[in-house]
Length: 415
Ligand code: RIB
Image (cartoon, rainbow, N blue to C red; front, side, top):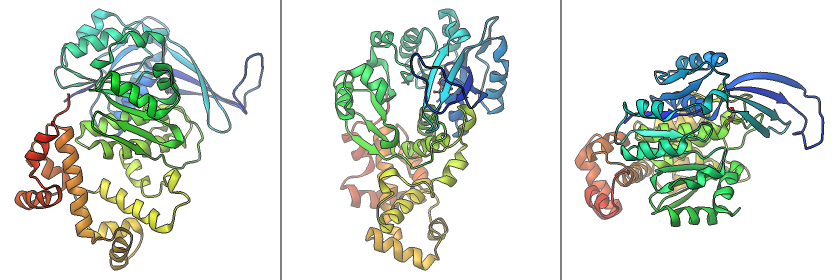
């Protein structure tokens, strides 16, 4: 399964301001820096830093050659990045003291895609491959149609939202990742639950991920709706937080992670991005994310008891180290001795470490059975079992049916 991101590359001119300027006002900025950016470039870098392979397609101008070099340095394949005799797209960004931003774009080379070029790039991709799109390039509707005809999975991040997007048949979209502002433009309501309900009612096969800033995010598909908390960080610059989330999310799914795991890592990655200045430059690597996950506190857990925080840490350790989890590793992650860590697990979860581990492994396997076409053997390896018959026995005890029966009932396989 290959990932193609057809998107923008911008030069970001970032101005630090006390407050975002309002109409009619003139302000003096506190500083100015130039960063690489563009939703497309940011998402490709996030995908690459999350450990997945990605092809970035799009157009850069004469002044944007360094953006292509940066993509390549980050391991992104730029075989489909075209250099035009034009001005590169750029963004003028104000970042306030509280980390909020306000952006306007000059599209330049980003909106110079042609149908011919798109068709030529898509020749190298086929059924099952993933096309990642944002809305900073032209011909988004055409790309969706052509990729859908090929049977590709399409992830659309409808940002920035424009009315033309409403003409697209979203039944062709596999994953829609959007924020509250975009959801409101699209569905007409500010209420997150109502937005989700609207989207699923109209596009029942789509998987929707609605990001809600400090309130975390909601994942929904035709079978489930799940909420995830955001992590507490000192926001320095929120630019590219959404791009980091989107890139990590799809990279993790492509690497076989369940939706739950993918969202956990994507949320942590975007929290880290927010605590640094700049767009692409603020995107963390996977190992930075994995390291930081133990120290990040979910917003809603901040005021919770110590026990709840430990339970959170145990959960995070198990979701990152599901395959190779052991008491030594958990004790190290918690910062306690093995014996004390074992006692803590019992106290906060009412279960032994081993029972908890079986539960998590089976839950992850259940998710993969429903969400992917992976074989049972692959799933068993992925969740960390060495002995297949042991897995089948534990799974049956927990879910009352064997893995294949479980998959059959819940209609396996991604679109
Ligand atoms: O999402 C952040 C990006 O939006 C910035 O890098 C800027 O280029 C704009 O496209």
